[in-house]
Length: 323
Image 1: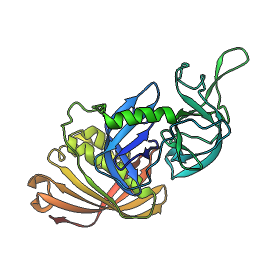
Image 2: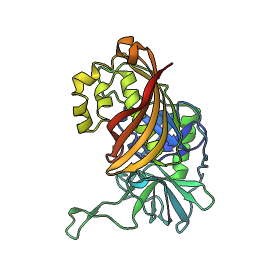
Image 3: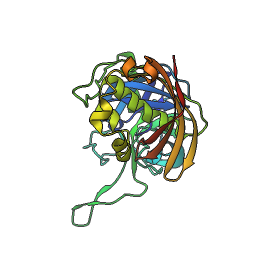
């Protein structure tokens, strides 16, 4: 999980390492949760452009054409530690830094003392005018001690972003002439699918988008036949309640999710509950009361597992409707 920012209604910029090895990409913008694909990626420079499957509304950023001078006040926008949105202020304290992580003297690295944490990666480093002058890359954690040996240590006030001006040249190129990168296939049995699942987040709780993203991963995997990936969204206890993978997956081979709607969220001891409705189609033998089209109304109990809300329990709030 990382951060990205819109440059138009369908394109977001992020760090290449945020999407490295991704089998699926979900994006949450202002309560809208959609899927995305990779339009361009440069691993050595740590820049990527992704395209959403449909337009989203939100602030679009302007990328600066030149680097700001050292001393310029900047802010880091993003979702550190996979938590809610945060804004941290600092200054530019180095340009074209040659000892940045992974740069090998060729990276276009800007150094800042703005506070950065995991989860900020891919987010914008902005000036007071709102122009993007950097894409958050990393903090410095590997330094050399007095004997020349590398030691693990956080270098305070020594954080890195890819130059926004340089990144703009790649983003403009990919926007004009896309260079798609295929997503990773993590399940050999998975079937091709467009996975156009409609997602609605109908709650002011900021965790609503995170819950929707977790359920979208689950639903996309079911639609594509990547059942082991879908099964991994359950907690180990919930997996046991399902009777094990073979039992659970045997009823999924005809199921297809079409929409997800996340409603009220409430805190409970050790996690949250979320009221969720979703629309599926399935063989009549797998549908409640022999129906082929169902609208389910569920209360999910979910627990946070580093970057995803895992499903701990699911209970119907009312019987499913036919559709």
